[in-house]
Image (tube, rainbow, N blue to C red; front, side, top):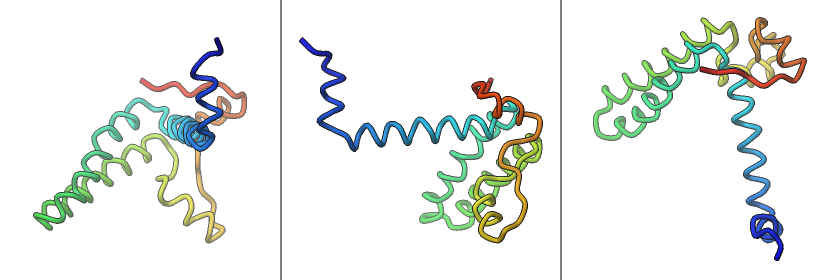
Length: 119
């Protein structure tokens, strides 16, 4: 009897594409957040910013404060890492400005194809 996970993949090619996309996105994210401080400050900043969007509906000032503080934490993490904040990179690309996608200290790992290491 064939492996069910293999045959199921042929029935759902969109699911396979979504899984491939998610794996690439996570690998890219981990590559940009290799410094443990940056990784963990994002674990605080991202949920705070997302919660701020929900809180914004009920308490606008608290929601705005959560969003700003969440993004501020992420910005601090990227300053420590040495690369640009992810939301700014596409804007800089569009305008033809220089940007730092992966911090120079991790460039040799990315070029060698070594996996990103995070805490």
